[in-house]
Image (tube, rainbow, N blue to C red; front, side, top):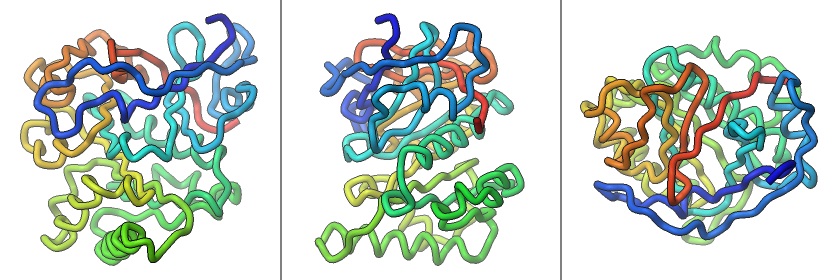
Length: 277
């Protein structure tokens, strides 16, 4: 495959609401040229710039072990909600940031808006302060910010209006860093957010969340509707079985910054690039 990059519509590969991940044939698989130099320090900007031609409406996950950029196509409701899970300190927030960085680079502000909920807003300062990102941002809020409940309510109403054909507008990428803090929200907001997990993608509202692996057993209610699973290192087999739906991802040997995703027949490993240019 030489100088090509792989584009896999992962959402079509994962059985929604399943207790066991089943093998399915990819419905979309294509290659595009990449022009990165061997040994070059990889950043989001360099990888995105190297892809010729650059497909629209995609976001970057990372770089495969054979040097190919790995992209996820946005726009297919089959992708559903995405969960990024690994041990604490193994790179889950950095994975979310790579996805946001690349999504902004492949979408205009008229095509995509980004809303981020996180325990530590300071970790996302580059997206708040940089003019390249500001036009895309709807906000970066701590989970305990009182504005969060209104934000979720507004997105729920937007999704319902779009389902009825009453609203259009840009796609929304909703990032939920440290998903376990969701249960600090009031019950109405939790109900709305759970509905968005299940149906948001049908209205171009894309949820990508992260969770520390050791919390998986306590948060199965929130894990269940995530159709696409991105796995970093998970040492416990019991936790891994919940997160990868018993598909034997075998992530215990991954290094920090390495992740895997189901391709329909196997788990594909890749590494995270640095942020920026």
